[in-house]
Length: 297
Image (tube, rainbow, N blue to C red; front, side):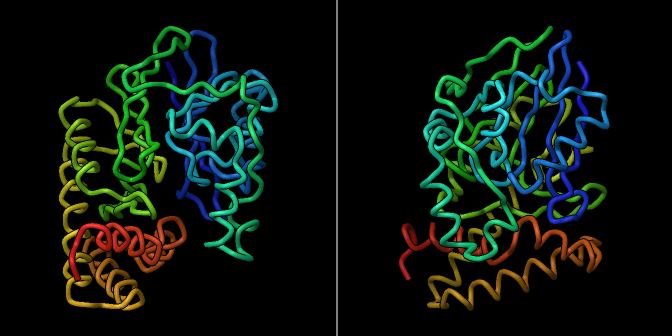
């Protein structure tokens, strides 16, 4: 089996969103497609690898956030089968509610950031249950239910290799700062920690992040990321209890994370890249919304 990371150059910036080209036994698959706005980049990357995009018959999307699955419908309309979480299937078939929700957040930036999300034909969408696997060349791809970032989230496992989507967070390649992927509205720290514990117990040989690339030390990464989830949750919960406003929490989250990132050795340029892919305002909102439901102010 061969795994090739494809950098989608989101917003013209390298190292933010990856799609993984996987080859096994003469079959080709993609794990993650990225957004519609980078579809042209993905197609060009496939061509540069000598791959005929029409030969990709399987697409695995960890969840239906636009930066992971926005281009999936295009591949489905061209004959590929999309494999996804059961809660994600209806949104791939009819993405109108997903698009409407995203547009209410991103407003006039919506099309520039995410591009078009095409509906997938219903007969090209397969919902996988937790632990279910599908044959792919000489291997099998198994779905692991891994909520916490989103309820509709799968990690995909091939032997000792895990494609973690957003369950294992964001880390720019070659850096040590771990950014907690906490986009609203489904951030759930209890479920998140359970998902991390499940990945830790598996003792994977390799872990691939959508944001971004392979992790050099799987156990160290997951252990550190587990602590980071708890850290951001406790911090925002304290601010919420103290009566901080939405904007105060956003500002506090940004300033604190910026300081942590710089202490971890991130450059100012890399911090800007992090903000472009996993913005602190968005993450602050995700954690705060969970606290609104669970923590008394």
